[in-house]
Length: 211
Image (tube, rainbow, N blue to C red; front, side, top):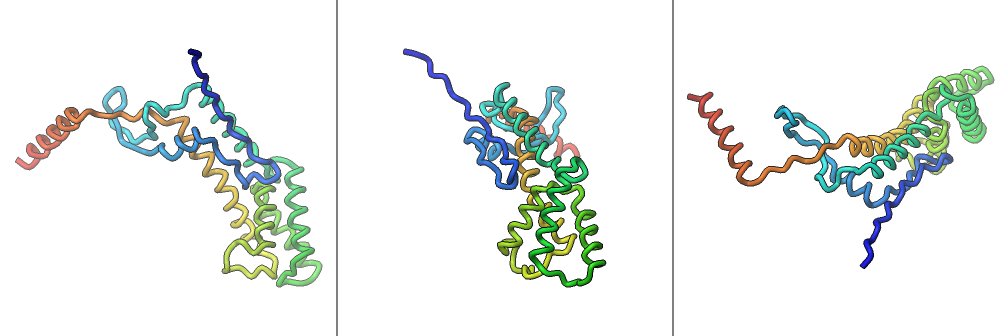
């Protein structure tokens, strides 16, 4: 009877056209992300620390770690798609803002206001990935940012930045969950007898302090 070889499902990279529309993580990754948590447990020297933990059976092996690290690198790449980092991304942001100013009216009028407003938008968005700006504007056109906004007008520079950063935080959230898997330590599990012994030691210490 042959030995079955488990095929490790790869993590699909984000779509560079719309990184905010994250690909679904494979089941083996999602399971670990859902299970990973913070816990206080002793290290090898007996010092108790709060660390990310996973059951020993779910700790990443070398191949899994490589796939997770590769995906984190791809997320880092899309997070760096900002006007500050590359002129092409600056042009993409400028194009998105220019289209928006042509489609939607502003509460201010005049050529000087238009020029100053363009500069204000680029100042507000210089460190924001161009795809996040485009995604924020796509949702603005669709009135998907909630009822507190009046979508017949252009968003203010600070508002557009806030909405675009919401898209960035979604990507950063996935990156943080994946990084937790990389640093997770095996969960230290105690037998019932060990737990009872620890409770006894704590109780004895408390009695000494109150004596």
